[in-house]
Structures are given as C-alpha cells and as structure tokens.
Length: 130
Image 1 (tube, rainbow, N blue to C red):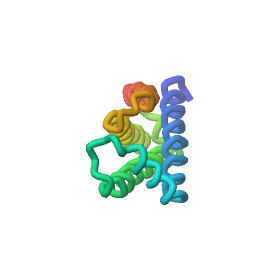
Image 2 (spheres, one colour):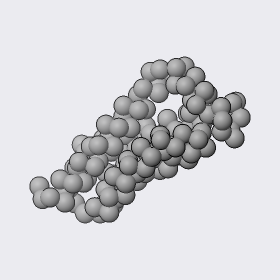
Image 3 (cartoon, helix red, strand yellow):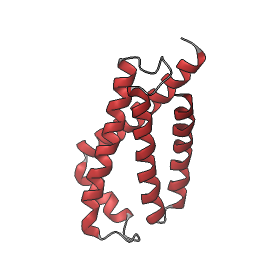
C-alpha cells in the first residue's frame, strides 16, 4: 500500500471510529443525550421542542458517515484514487462536522466549536487525498 492510500485509510478509519461511537452512543443512551442537548441549547435560537428532531437528524448523518466509512474500509475503496465509498464516508463526515459546529456556535459553546474545527481540518485534508 502506498503512502497516499495509507493516508486515505487512516482518515477513513478515524471517522469510522469517531462517528460509529458517537452514533451508537446516541442510540444506546437516547434519553441522556436528548437531555444533554436540551440543556446545551438553552441559549440557542432553537425552540426546546426542536431538539429531539435535530438530535435524530444529527444521529442519522453521523450514522451514515460511520456506515460509509466502514464500508469503504471493508471494500478497500480507499486504495484507488477517486470518489468511492470511503470518499463518500469522509464527505458525510464533513457534513456531520458542519452540523456540529453550527450547533456549537449557536449554543455559544466556542471551546466546543474549536474542537470540532480540528476534526473538520482532518476531513478537509482527507478529502484532498481522494
């Protein structure tokens, strides 16, 4: 495996783990996560009633990112240059990160947004590799 393919593998594996764990946590501790998000977004312009809908939308995007990245790893689609399953997974990861950073900024959690920005940089670098 050449260095470029290994780089694509690492980025794809990184997001498979990050969003796999995140989406599974949201599914297995739904009530705790919704309570956390409801509290977290009290200072945001979102009405409290919208939090569960936004929670499920984020969970779906994170789950799709994890699934596509995992499938990309299993099918070795990260090996060849081009827009394969792994690239779709990293793209979906970038979308999930945009949703997360919008939420962090609207919740006025600027430290949390800075952490998400670092993950987003990894996504951008990974997409450049594909």
